[in-house]
Image (cartoon, rainbow over all chains, first blue to last red; front, side, top):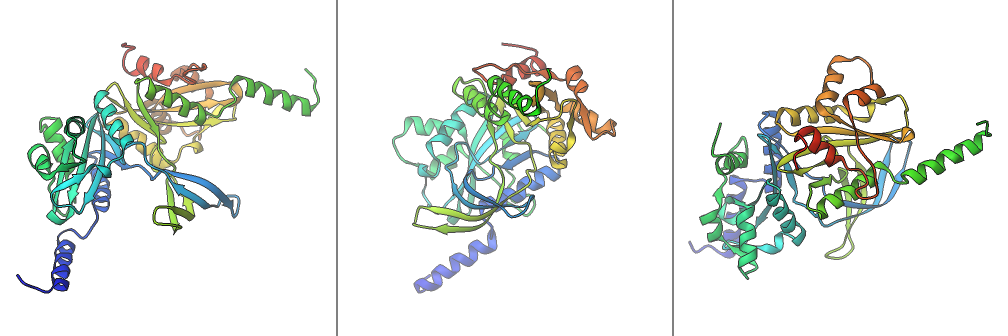
Length: 190
Length: 190
């Protein structure tokens, strides 16, 4: 496989595009819409928190935000309800092949996941290793246990392979994480 | 009590300021922070959904939103977790003294509340009648029942008095709605 560098890169791009094409966020949005419309679960992505500084009122009804800034989220991005259970998760895709840098999740979010577990909610992270074409669900408990006991600032892929769960991808739903939630947390009940 | 109009108005303003001073949203924010810090419940207000049109990157890290618009929320404003239960509500304050205009809650939000109940979550509305200085919790079930069976576009105060629950206001927490949730939905267990 001795192609010149430029062709190698092109190939990788084409393969990724053919297999997925969409970002994890887009896949999750489509999946959540599918869950909603099929009456399976009610999960939403929270809007990005924004600090609004200046608003112009063009007319009585029309307001245009003219100056605003992104704020750091203090919770995870997604939450909702499935079979009477509170569901809460953060989703990240990374280009690393061997580990997941914990810098992808801020300290407030770790604290939030810890609290959700304490209050008997279901909390986890969804991590897609883009170049491996694999997406895992890792329970919040296993994430917290790693953070509390390991000094490394990255979670090795092996942790996802041993303790996490592969999420199947397909056309509809794009990424069926609720199936995994049902198997892992609710004993696979119908 | 025959004061000239201007004095009357002033008096009303002073009374309101002394008794509450803060908007329902501010009271709820303080209350939710208190619940969070006291490890009672994890409830957040969702950020206002915004459609971002133009962003300027002043530097590598600093992004300023230069043009954006408010979007209509498709869910309620507040959700979270209490004793393992999924909690979801919308909060409104109104100046009316005799009824709560349903125009305060959009069709998507009604549909959302209906879904939450179907999926065994706890859904309600908190309504403050500012001029009466009374704040009620009305169960989502009673809201939906009114919408489905009555033709009126306003819920009379009597419905809140008969079917709703008064939420006590104090200094800390400002507005103890979780106590009502505990009494009404969880049988008052400690």
